[in-house]
Length: 387
Image 1 (cartoon, rainbow, N blue to C red):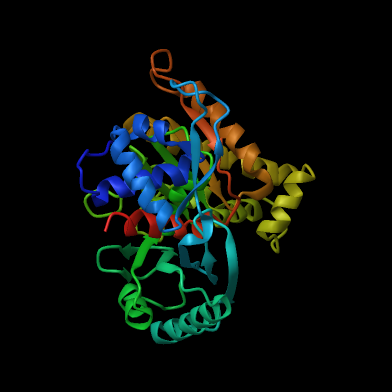
Image 2: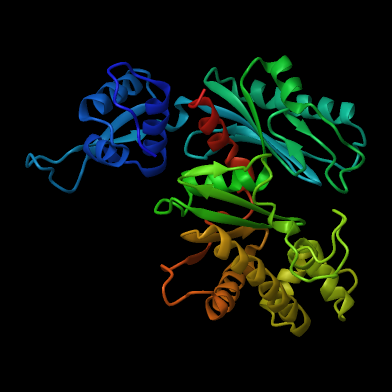
């Protein structure tokens, strides 16, 4: 993404510059000019404004000399200059907290979903949680609220529709409710998209402009980053990876289709297959991970099966999206590296046009299971700076 050189500071350039400093800092003014296409004069003017507001600071000198023979001054973000009230809504648990621009969680708390069965009680519990977080933090620097949630949702309408197995809660106008109570900008996105933003801002995606993020949880999600921007498609539903068909006429899915990837690769699906094939009926995800580490034959076969079906989905993603990298994250925990290696090996053995296609990386996410929470800070930054 390139900026536009105008004498007046405009929003697009300010967004582009701060995003570059946040994702690639410490960075010099010269590098910012080269990477954004903005003139040195424009970069200097914008940087000076951010320094005056306490959002950016000069953090030292580069190890390398510039063309003038002097070592350029490096710039970085002031992490606590802008804070986010982040909310992550899962199927079983809701977490809220104050998060800075570097993804540091300054304070947080949560509640379990089991005792809530309607939208009104859900919002009441959420307000109690957020009120206590705000009271504890006492910070006046909060510049927005980021909400990541299981889907389906409407980002444009700010509504959580009717997620499967969500205790009867549906049609929650969460953005409107938050704006009415807190009088702050509020942004809503599906959890996997927020995880992809986290990888771009704070994780292992610094060197990739085009990548796909795979999220393995009780459901399976996907998100596309194109030219370092989140791509939602015409209706915001691009990247619905869990509902790719990987087995024609296969296991019925809650979405109404048969053979969806989610029915083979989610943590729920993995546990179900292991139990159906001789594992302890009381097997939980944590005990499954322990058994894999201990070499349990059935659980190891379940991981191999996961890798096989996930590789089918990833191969299709590569064929039509042509990304530079695939990141795999979510709740894989101790088997994350095993899964990444298994998927990578299977994909590379069957990848179309591998002799002419540029190298494609398949990597583990930097984050184990909290990217969809800390990334609400990136969600607010993405949207506030564009406004």
